[in-house]
Image 1 (tube, rainbow, N blue to C red):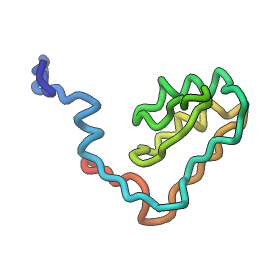
Image 2: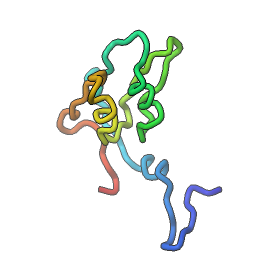
Image 3: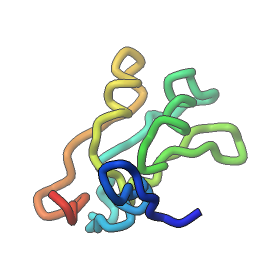
Image 4: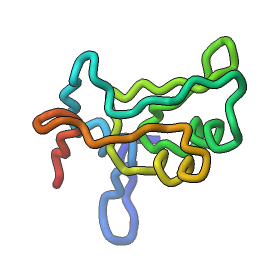
Length: 104
């Protein structure tokens, strides 16, 4: 299967291909997302490993959830999912850093 399928309205570009077009300027040493230390991840943190559209969350070999924010599209999914638990600290990146959307 190709990266671009043709639908009734013309070419259909997959989400992965669109995300690949974006660029991300990393603010080294100043991540805009931090996960609070935890022994065992909550259901909300575990959900982020599947819900984050940029795939920023994963489990390490100790079973804890980690975030690699390079490539974050700043959609706020993690803020919403962990709003009640407060396990994720989320701030906008400093000016000039973060995601640079190619198509607006």
